[in-house]
Image (cartoon, rainbow, N blue to C red; front, side, top):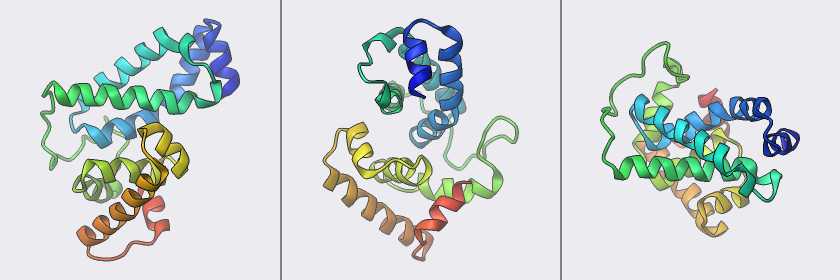
Length: 176
């Protein structure tokens, strides 16, 4: 990925497109953890891509591209939430063709949506996206111990909501 970032920084549009394509599922999952409406999710991703394109030269270290991208996306999602544009009810099942959320994973996403945002986002970053605690702390601008605590509490809340203690591998498998 570093190679693509370097090429994109040299204004290679094909490299930038390839870079965004490689991150689109990650961006969708993160935006979905904040927003319910597919339109809002699409807006957040589109704004993020535009901002990344315009500000790519400001990225100093290519190895932190994904962290930088996710932080921009999270800020765009928060902007949309603050604008009060969240319209889609949480109970609404995603459309068949327009979403990467399959029916078998719907229950898992419903469980995540029932959690407090601060726990939901950390669980997604840790279990779905595979970030380490240190990386999550950096993305969210939190202390590592805060991330560990929220991860633990998020697991506990999910277990309470689901009425059993899900092993860590369940959380990883449920999203696939």
